Image: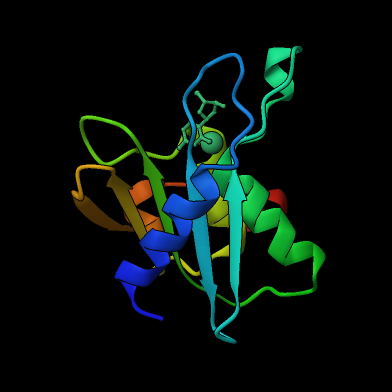
Amino acid sequence: MNTEQLIDRAKEVRNRAYVPYSKFPVGAAILMKSGKVYEGCNIENAAYPVTCCAERVAIFKAISEGETDFEEIAVVADTNRPVPPCGSCRQVISEFFEQDTKVHTTNLSGEVKTLTVRELLPYSFNQDDLTK
Ligand SMILES: O=c1ccn([C@H]2C[C@H](O)[C@@H](CO)O2)c(=O)[nH]1
Ligand SMILES: [Zn+2]
């Protein structure tokens, strides 16, 4: 599975987004080190803050299946620039991915901007901060 194929999987799952409020579908696909792929789309709610982003849906699916070895993630939306993951997702990505893991942000025009987790969320709060 190459990056292009992973982006295609993100585009596919984007079609299953539940977005009656924002009408802004997002898709995410994660390649695990095992070769397995986990997909996620954003799922909204009438109580708006209950919404879960595509990235977190995909990550939580993997974690709940006992898979923790993340290789790379692709995120896609219909945006003018490659879609940047929100702050909450950056924090969750940072919790579970190695800091040099690649995050491929993309849009439907085919633009791809690849960042590392570290670049996406520098100076992150993490579990080391919990113990002095
Ligand atoms: O990277 C992003 C950015 C936004 N959203 C979702 C949240 C909400 O459902 C909609 C508009 O913010 O897009 C994602 O899923 N991922
Ligand atoms: Zn998010």
